[in-house]
Image 1 (tube, helix red, strand yellow):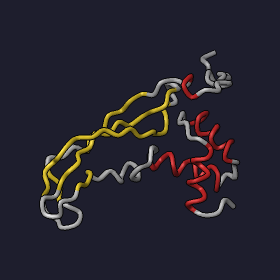
Image 2: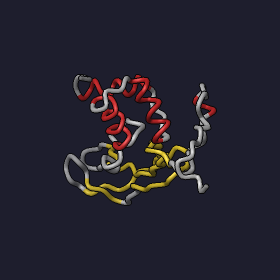
Image 3: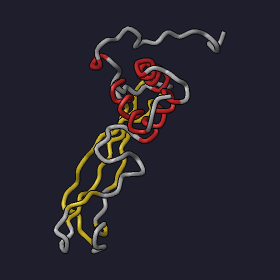
Image 4: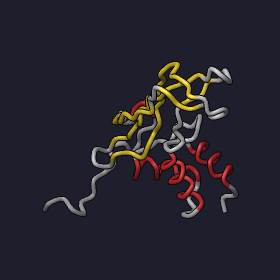
Length: 149
């Protein structure tokens, strides 16, 4: 038998601590630019420094490991406005969010469309997509988007 249709138990079932979960596979992305135009005045602004941000994405099911996007981005300073701004990363995730748009939409879809409770959606995301999202975070996402039902 070649293994198709064979039941393979989840190696992480019964794990109670986040520290015991498999280590994530890191994928590097870059949003590092020498110059960007200021969002307020449009003046070309040079890079002031380079910063790194980690985003959790839907996992790799072949290896059974989560995927983390490590985004290197540039921070710029406008000499006219005297403001600091970051290179645009809204295609990957919203500002100050630790998860990509794909994870957020998947979690909200599980609760709203499939009608799963928050804790069950948390487990489903780990089991089927290898991304750990606390159920309270899923609850905040759903309530920000509207009512559960």
